Image 1 (spheres, one colour):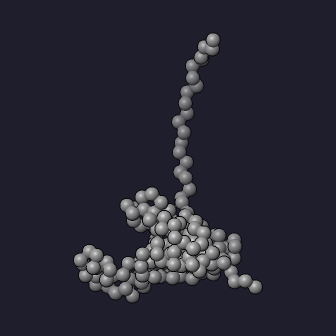
Image 2 (cartoon, one colour; image 1 turned 120 degrees about the vertical axis):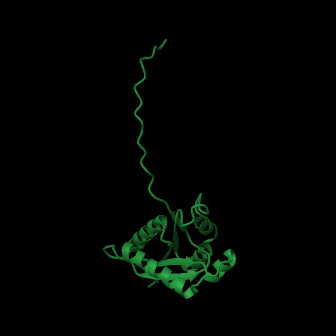
Image 3 (tube, rainbow, N blue to C red; image 1 turned 180 degrees about the vertical axis):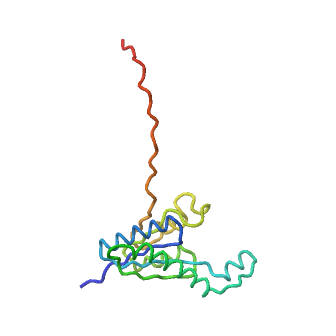
Length: 164
């Protein structure tokens, strides 16, 4: 008997990552896969060094906060399904793109949202999504919101034309 597939989904509490989680959880249920939900955070030391501001919290405190947010999101989205998949929650320090591509080495599919928290950095595809598409070791699904329905203006019928 082969082991079940593993689907990895990156979440950051943005609306698009929530959509990715919903999509990945549904696919995991359909295919009997285990869902590995991955959240990342920037180390307090790196953040402080980059911006020259001492951060009064430890990486452990940041990780616990991110884990609590992620667990709440998983509870709300995944465990609301009639038959939720098996779920693993993983919180790792580091850049999201690199962590997710690292996780892709043991995954059968990687899911990411179209945009994350950084609006400027993810203006086109999303820097994390682009990184994952280019570097992942498994297929990647970039989950986009459904297209908005635009109302079409009703054009008046053209006046009778003379055909010669």
